[in-house]
Length: 345
Image 1 (cartoon, helix red, strand yellow):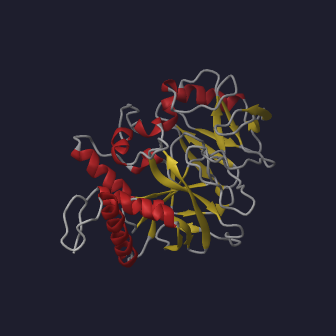
Image 2 (image 1 turned 90 degrees about the vertical axis):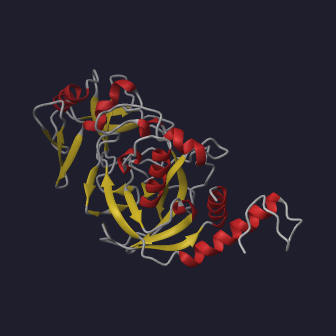
Image 3 (image 1 turned 60 degrees about the horizontal axis):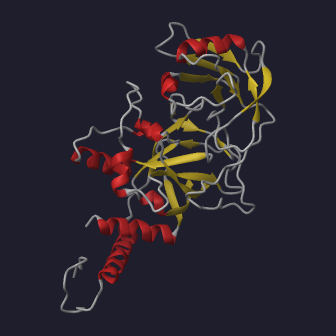
């Protein structure tokens, strides 16, 4: 017998609304446990060689402790040494910078705002020098490699950011993941630390096709256009999970690589920028606020991953269509997910 909050029951007439919600959550929780039997697979893979620039979609990726090889290995820095981000309205052209990786050392840059492309060898770049710069979510300035005036001139033309410089990771680069204080979820490694590239918080971000489909249904119901997954800048997109089920995971294996599913990803204004037109608007944050805003103010979409210590075998790769195995659930987050479903009944 299905029980809905607010309905009377001849069997248990004294149930409070809170108790009914708890029982219904438990029912959904058990139903979910039985029903997740289909294959969960990798649908898309992407890296972002230059932080805040266009994604590079790939079929196979090489995992490392600090992220996929080639992911967030460089950033644009303004004349004052501050990281350039499309969050600033005068820097949205960053989203139109496309990057190709040729071998270990060569990057090719393209932009619709510049006629010619630019090829850079990061090991032999003319005028390359170390430079102390700001990196988002880092408490102190970090030494990156400034790749010189020639490539900087190209990026000024492509982005219209005066005095910007291309700076990137060198061989001695070290940086640690940062806990989002609002999320309050500790790094799940033995020593409470994890290496990371120039990504804001964590080495990897996983998103779920079903969650995007649910969000788009809600957008359309509110008379708003749908959006694509580029708004959320994931590294790994999976199919086969239920909507928002990614929230409830604790540990997964993709092929032979094991990950901790760490903190949920609170979304910011970057998600409100159309990647093609560069127009800004209130969505999808306005719609996420109607059903995804937690008590801490975070409007989550996607989850951060950290490789389990020793969880990346030598020579490991991850490929589109690889199977994703759920090794462990976070029981508290799983109950929270079930309660969200109850609210939608």
